[in-house]
Image 1 (cartoon, rainbow, N blue to C red):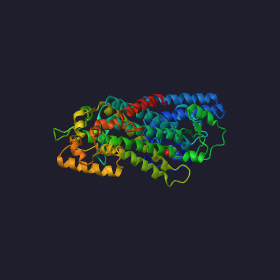
Image 2: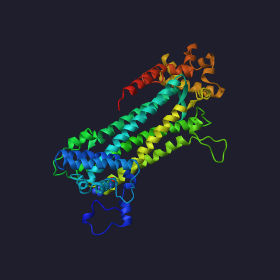
Image 3: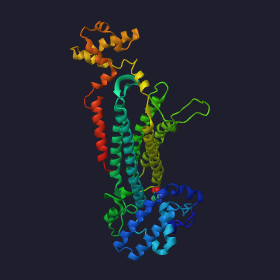
Image 4: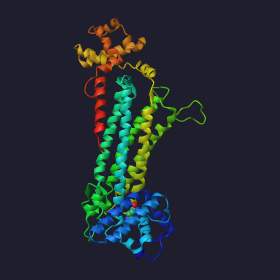
Amino acid sequence: MKKKVWGGRFKQRLDPLADKFNSSIHFDKRLYPYDIKGSIAHCRMLAKKGIIREDEAKKIIDALNEIKDELDKGKISFGGYEDIHSLVEDRLIEKIGDIGRKLHTARSRNDQVSLDTRMFLKDAIEDVLKKIKILQLALIEKAEENIDIVIPGYTHLQRAQPVLLSHHLMAYYEMLKRDKERFRECRKRTDIMPLGSAALSGTSFDLDRDMVREELGFKEISRNSMDAVSDRDFIIDFIYASSMLMMHLSRLSEELIIWSTQEFGFIDIPDSFATGSSIMPQKKNPDVLELIRGKTGRVYGSLISVLTMMKGLPLTYNKDMQEDKEPLFDTYDTIKDCLEIMERLIRNISFRRERIKDALRGGYITATDLAEYLVKKGVPFRTSHEIVGRIVLYAIEKGKELMELSLDELKGFSDLIEEDVYEWLDPIKSVEKKEIYGGTGPKHVRRMIEEAKKEILEEDE
Ligand code: ARG
């Protein structure tokens, strides 16, 4: 056990079990680059404001850079330290003695940990935004490549109406676009520099908070020290945005899993993304997709953890809040893996055109088109719905597709039906009629793909 940064007031050493329980070094060690960068900025500012001397600041900064280097090279063992903040300070004092003891002037671990976490999260959000974008590009590429494929669209997982496969894929593009908006929103609230709040009330030292903000690349500085040291909303925002993202990735996974079954057979998952069974030699399982679906649960779990951890806390800092970091780190690690793997998988998926074509049969998926045809001939929609219902029943009894009914058979249900009806019964032509903005018409979908490409290139993260 290392000497504590708070040791002065204590007569007894911390119980070893309590010490282990109290410590967060095993997970907050990954904050070290931010902790050191933040300390350097703080130190420069202390010197500029004459709170410490320039030569002292130089010594501190050189030593901090050395510590960073040692940590990068894995030369420092984390054992025995309470947290990353005490480790860095402890090493600093070991290196330069009493001068090192000046760094923590006008600072508390309470504002420090908020700073480090915010810096970490800003980078994480940047990375997540990039990864979502790459996944969106993969979807666009697949949508373009397969623009001519018509699939049955489903409601209630029952064949409903024909749609372009590209339209289906681009639906996920839209979801991801909203996900990015949520992460950008969260970034706004993360981009606030808390240093200068100290333990909870600010400090009597005349700090230049704006200098620290500028050096660390933050947009704003916090306006209320009590809020700054006890706010974890930005973490919850991130995990919420991640939960939504995972919900979307999970739905996509589920669809791909269904599409890869022998029953559907719409896609082939490349061997490089599937696994076998230890007993059934014929099996090829979509484990990777199942894992994305499964990992959604742990991200939701993290959201509930942090929300619950925060809900009863009086202002300001409480040690409960140390429990924010594992869910945060786990969420980031999980979503970044899921995004990467989903992107690669999408790029490597192939669509089985013949099987998809077969699936356009048997579901009477142009029945609505037929109803719309009759409406255009002057039949009120509810009446035409009924007529078509009877036609479908008839076709089922005869074991025929709507397309396969003769004009005479169709006329038996309404004499308004003419030869031109067949244009409305063909799934491919049905899609072509849906050129409404937002619909599955090929021209519109192409336009949307172009728009997506443009907007994604114009984005600057
Ligand atoms: N490890 C602590 C955390 O993650 C750092 C802040 C400690 N502050 C304190 N007053 N004990 O929350």
